[in-house]
Amino acid sequence: MNAKTLYSLVVAALVALLAAWWISSAQKPVTESAEQTKTLLPGFREQVNDVNAITFTGAENKVLATLKRGADGWTIADKAGYPADVAKLREFLLKLADANVLEQKTSSPKHYAELGVGDVSDKDAGGVLVTLDGLKQPVKLIIGNFNGAGGGGTFVRREGEAQSLLVKGNLTVDKTVAGWERKDIVDIAATRLKQVTVANPDGKVLKVYKEQPGDANFKVADVPKGRALSSDFVANTLASTLTGLHADDVYPAKEMAPAEKVYKADYLAFDGLDVAMLAWVKDGKDYAQLSATLDNAAATTHVEADQAKAQADYEVAVQAGKSAAKAGEGADKKAEGKATADPAAEPIAPLAVTDPAKDKAERLKVLNDEVAMLNKSFSGWTFVLPNFKFSNIDKSLDDMLKPLEQKKPDAKDASKAAPRKPAEKPSATPAKKS
Image 1: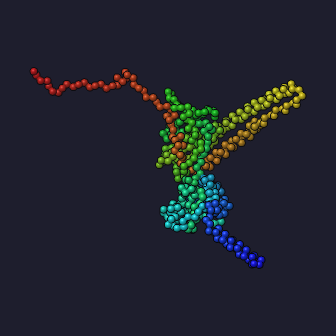
Image 2: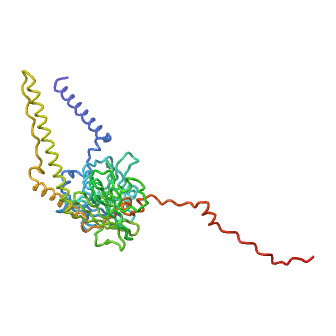
């Protein structure tokens, strides 16, 4: 066999081996790790910040919620432009951007309902059509059931495509408008408050207060003579109403006006912030409207008191520094062959000491800015409060007090009070003569 023939045989053998390897590789099933590299929405992560509108559509093509991004951020069109929950929205968009395909599922319409990926025009559709606008090409994705029992993942189908998919992660969406609303209303710590006043619809007024910011508990005003509080801390819950206050739902104020009978609550802080609340019950729900103002007299008094404390603290620090320096000088004189100690650094005077007028102006500006920010959130809206928060408003003075003891009648009183046995009447039958 000459060299040319040998070379031809070697080449033919290599070609055969390569062909066999290619056929074998093509017939192998795709591994899970390779399948997961298939992105559900290719290129979406790079465009996620371009999304400017999201529409959620349910069965019978009913729009569940429409979120839009404008100059004031994300708002809900279905709620007259109330702010949306941006954190929840962003989390959902990032989940979509990171969603990878686990496996292909049915492409038969008769099996769509089992996965929740049927057309939302159907009255029995179980999924939600998510439409993302603002991109180069709008994204329309039907999000079906969460396959928790199957190791995680969500069934989805791109609208217009027959093939349904199982993608990694839980992509199911909230089907209510309220679920996309910003929930936080206000967060004012109870320790900041000086006084809480609640006037019930019947006109009775409950007032609790602190004399100093450091007081552990609120006191109850106008406790009747002979009555006692149920505990030293019974009034503290009233001051916690504005702490982490969230709404279950929200309505434009013009669509949900106060009822005829309302609770009027007022929360005054030591620094002068004053939040007023109107609250009422209607159809089993607890509603409230809020507004904020600044009590300038209380704010000024608070700032001046803080400045006086800052001045006193500064003077104490200066005196302490002088004493330390003097002690150090005495020690250096006694020590031989040692370097003298550095003089103690003088404490830095705060603005409340160096320029009280400027300090006061800056602090009052911070308070006024806070009032403006709160009113921007409050104005024009009626909030549905959680019941446990409303229960802090639905209070009276009697709720703060120990129950009245029922007097037990003594023995003499009991005998007097006991009914007498009626005298026996003479028999109507005449006695027989002997």
